[in-house]
Picture 1 (cartoon, helix red, strand yellow):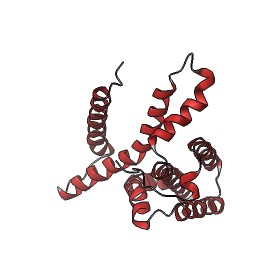
Picture 2 (cartoon, rainbow, N blue to C red):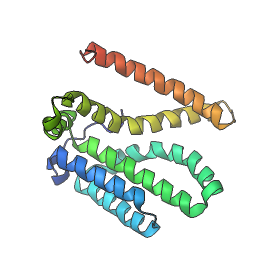
Picture 3 (tube, rainbow, N blue to C red):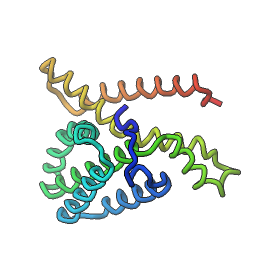
Picture 4 (spheres, one colour):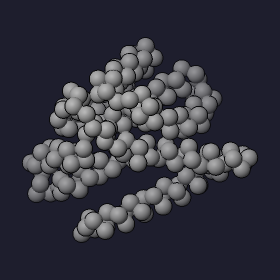
Length: 197
């Protein structure tokens, strides 16, 4: 999977998972309401600084973002067609920021820390909610965002290699089938580790 832990001792690595999750939620939510390209550019610069502060190598950082470019290569022209170039640019930058921040979280936070953070956060609700399952679901969701983008990239590369062109449906069907197969394998792995009860 993309976004596997990149060990380090930076301030970003040492920040508690709960704080990082809160900041991730706040920044991504705020970004969703920002319509100004100037503010989004400033937020993007902040994300780049965070990657630098975490001492994540440029190659590793780019590997997190490049797969989403395949999605944007398809989505941006549609957005330009229906909403104009500025709306397309805003959408693209928002998505890049969200994926980059999610990747930074997974690169600097062990899954065990995410599970612990969920236990702390959901402790008042433990009577109704299984904090371990919620933490695992959150960790898998964050890690699977770049994975899904990678699936889209692989399907598009395969179609390009075959010289195939087609509709949105011709792209969506293989992506959905591969995503379902990946989910099935993931489910089998979780079952093998005792998460089926």
